[in-house]
Length: 447
Image (cartoon, rainbow, N blue to C red; front, side, top):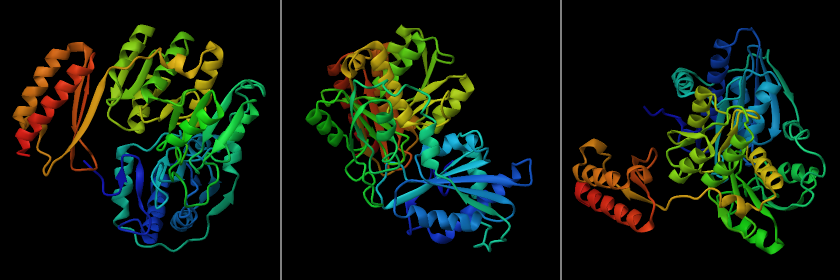
């Protein structure tokens, strides 16, 4: 069941329009205060707050604190830092909750809030529902005045968590392009990599409040690709606006699919017999070639619905240490309970160094199945089980592919679309299967 305000990754929207207003943010602060205090064993609770580089972030933070302050709530402002920094520092600062003000890879006109429990995990759907239930009854509050507010340099605290990973010359022979998306990684990622001896060409590192994700970062890889080729770099790294999503370009400027990045890291962890490495958790969107490569390496793949929160909770359930999405969210429980694009990039680069292979050479170790995706706009989301022609076509092609392919058919959670994905051993059969599914949809929906 969908909630009114929380989506697949916190609350997000265009600030100042529809529901996402000053009054709403203040009421949300009150709801979070009650939620945290109810679940705390002590009388006093601590909430830490970070934000990305959007111009609206400071204003949203002020309004949120207006509702949150008081009633023995200690508030710590962390300033601009990446989302994984908040996840890490919840535990590091012994806080009861972490709040990140961001709209991730969305444009600067959008903003939002993500919430983390005291372990650094994103809140569960049930916890989000409990917060929404409180919102309806809350009026714009008056500050009671007995809270405590302090400020810390969250970016510095986050950056320091990387200092012990490698020596100052560990990457001295690597030339790296870093696209920081004019976001929260802008003042951090290039400097951390330089501290380990890498030669860094930084782009998207001049945030002005309005240019976050503006034709830069992981959603716009063409700039990273061009810079890699221009500077003959060994690797290109692109973050998204809040630093929880990673995209990698190889030395030729070609984008490495997210499944391949996951596969390279997972195989390495299995080879190193790292605790919890035998199971890779990913989503239904990831290519079937990933499963085949991980099985060959001695591991297994577990799949969940789309969303990095779903990945993290399944990792917890299966005691897996690594998981991720093809979109670039990569989670290492040994480091952080949420996706961290900087840590993931450093891990991938350390594999390059350890195995003495280029990005393209590593990528060749994870061959993907041919695949094709499509989305059909529908006026009504009819139950899938009632679509006779589509189910007949699906059964036919699932029987044809067997274990060497798959079909994924699902409605979009946010748009009036029916999404299709076909994977198989050869491109011709994949194209034929997709056309068969599209023809069936035309019949079932009278398009």
